Amino acid sequence: MKIVIIKYNAGNIQSVLFALERIGIEAMVTDNHEEILAADKVIFPGVGEASSAMNSLKEANLDQLIKKLQQPVLGICVGMQLLCKYSEENDTPCLGVFEEPVQKFVSVNGLKVPQIGWNTISGLKSPLMKGIPENSYCYFVHSYYVPLTAHAIATTDYIQPYAAAIHTNNFYGVQFHAEKSAKAGEQILKNFIELPDVC
Image 1 (tube, one colour):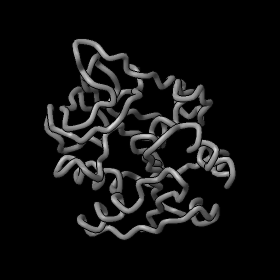
Image 2: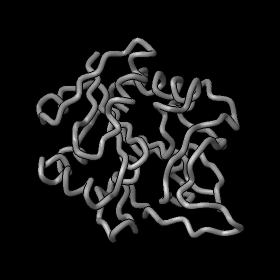
Image 3: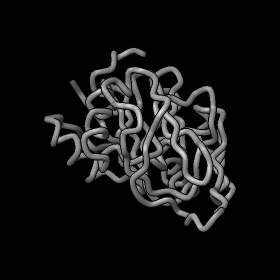
């Protein structure tokens, strides 16, 4: 099985590679279009800021490629946000795989922005969440979020309830860092690798 991690300037690539190694999975890191198209599974990680990440994708023509992928694709953190239609972060048009916008947290009751740390996920649906107990803890680092949506396959609550994971067709996204989320994160990565090649 060929697993590809998309290489671009906003990827949290090394952590994802290490997490896959821990579960016995080898992956290739590449921005080569043919390699990405030929992969069985594609991981689209991300850290940092939306507009510079989108610019990096556009420079390599990856923005058009990602939208056309037919195999299972997993966006992580900023990778998930870039799959959405638009981000309030620097007024950034994104890939539009999901129609949802990405919005900025507004701090209330002394809760800090960004959210940094462990939080529970619930309302778990889809094969991506197979074997994950309700209210499992995952690791989040973010100032922006996807609102609750029919595409949500997991939710969490920080300042307000929001989508912790989303799914449409062959595209999946997790707001938390699965690669840093201990046993729950490892199980989610295993589940993604075990998804049927055509969703």
